Length: 143
Image (tube, rainbow, N blue to C red; front, side, top):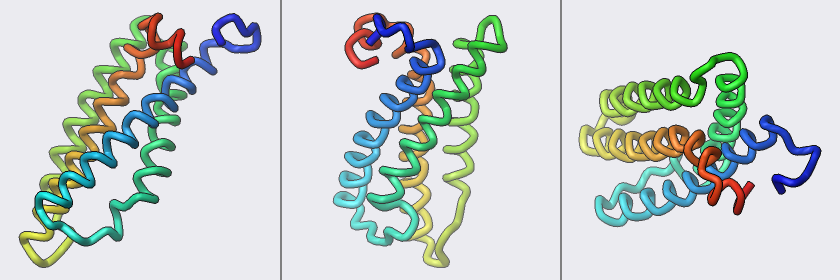
């Protein structure tokens, strides 16, 4: 697809975000199933199959566009984007573990762990967008 004259850096960034979204979605599914099987956590009003599919892919697609803007406006946009995503991931996971959703302490703790793990997966995949686009083997095969 790199030989296509209509494809530019913006398309590459979007496709990189989409690829990261697909990988993150699959990883979130595995984590969700594993976590629910090992802990017996049941409530699925917030984190469920639909929310994982749509929200994770949408977030990472938008972060791919955000990555393009970083590369366009900043000289070291790749590094700055990865650093910002790392800080945002750390902050989000930290806040997730302080979040109390249920009055039952055990359910609230389990929800925080499930949310924190999901946010960590999303953040790691977001940090990998520049790496995917810089690696010629990966980007040449998928993008």
